Image 1 (cartoon, rainbow, N blue to C red):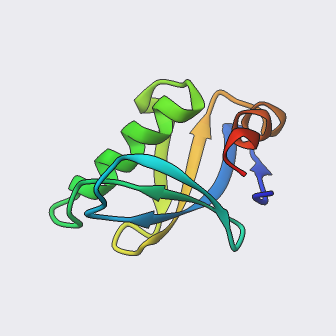
Image 2 (tube, one colour):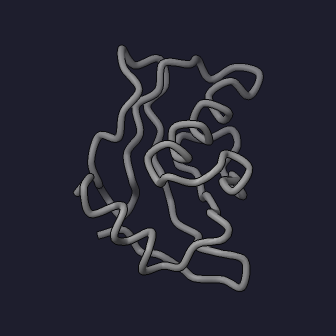
Length: 97
């Protein structure tokens, strides 16, 4: 399971991004991070925007509730999802483990 940290605004956890994949999907949990495959290339913030959109779809939240707070230029990113509790996020992530 992914280590989730609950804050006053929401939940913080890590993702690992695989850019330029053939499909957009959650590819399981590995090394304490949710692995996401995205089709966008890692240029001009396109991959980060696609990560936010995919996470919003997977977690059933609005895109503006998902923020990348660390790792903007890295494959390993720290994301924050506002308006949710750690228990809600954990329940939604169990489908991907």
